[in-house]
Length: 180
Ligand SMILES: [Zn+2]
Image 1 (cartoon, rainbow, N blue to C red):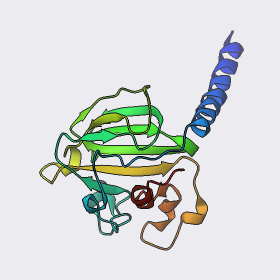
Image 2 (cartoon, protein in one colour; image 1 turned 45 degrees about the vertical axis):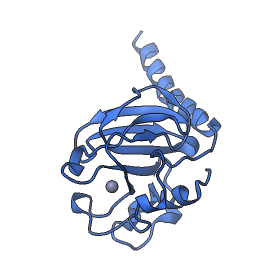
Image 3 (spheres, helix red, strand yellow; image 1 turned 90 degrees about the horizontal axis):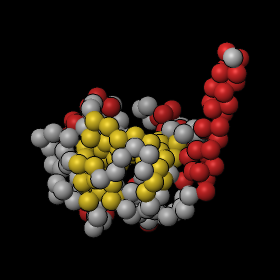
Image 4 (cartoon, rainbow, N blue to C red; image 1 turned 120 degrees about the vertical axis):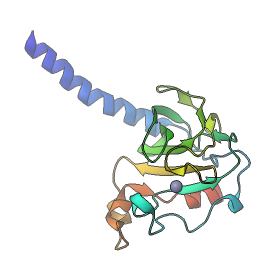
């Protein structure tokens, strides 16, 4: 009995990442700017890996400024892995998108999705706010793209540069709405 249980757990440990991987790679590669009506003047083109950046040391994403309550849209299709609240991000949503990349949307004022939901690129997932460490600052979406499988070639000699193997620069995606 006990052995069977162990085998089931091992099988689950193998199958869950495998099925998530297959799911992720099968998703459409379209990319949307994740705040409704936002364009280049709403973010700073040099803000990725900006230093110094408070507790975080470097800025591992981009901030897209908009009025509180503006719809936050899924940048890509995918599955809501986590919806949570607390810490620097305040109210946040994490979506697994194409090519095993996680999309992190933070400082939300409200959510319109739940964990486990499937979303399409451009579909609303919440609204812009200033929760977490953005409290008292201008409302904005903090958006990060995180590779589950590290890209060692992206690591460089910048401050915390080794961590770039995990973080993609979202700005070229925003600027060109380039697909994956
Ligand atoms: Zn930010």
